Length: 64
Image (tube, rainbow, N blue to C red):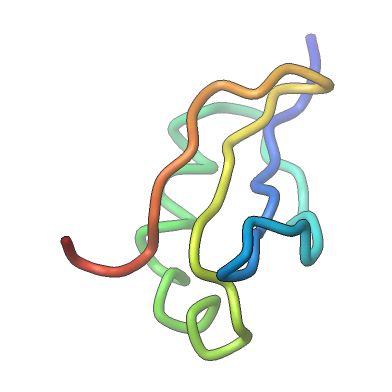
């Protein structure tokens, strides 16, 4: 089974970098819950959760 990772995107939607990998979706989502504000400070505006080459979903890091 493929690992999960977050792809970070800048304001224009361009890729910034990928995070470390996680063995489960739950682990990846828990990590995001703990680190989203640090990612904003790094310049990320949105993230996509990926499993291998598959994009599962994208979300913004700022409150709507």
